[in-house]
Image (cartoon, rainbow, N blue to C red; front, side):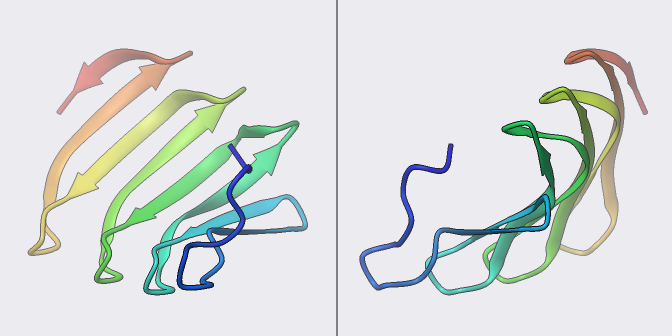
Amino acid sequence: MLEKKNYANGQEVYKYDDDKLTYFYKNGKIKTEGPFENNQMEGEWRFYRESGQLWQIGNFRNGKKHGTWTRFDKNNQQEYHESFKDGKLTKIK
């Protein structure tokens, strides 16, 4: 997951500090960010469009989707809200 360090333009692909992992787009804007423990995604993660706009918020446990996931459309309106347990979809709203 952390193999590629830089894009061809020199921009960092990711930064890892104090158990927080942040991925970037080639333009330098944040792509996704959240806790990274024991080489896996853990806790709440935020995902952004290349424009910098929030796209979705989701939770991981032991590297699998677990808990709520909410996706937003380009007008910042909630597109859907789902719940997962150990990587399996349990509820859609």
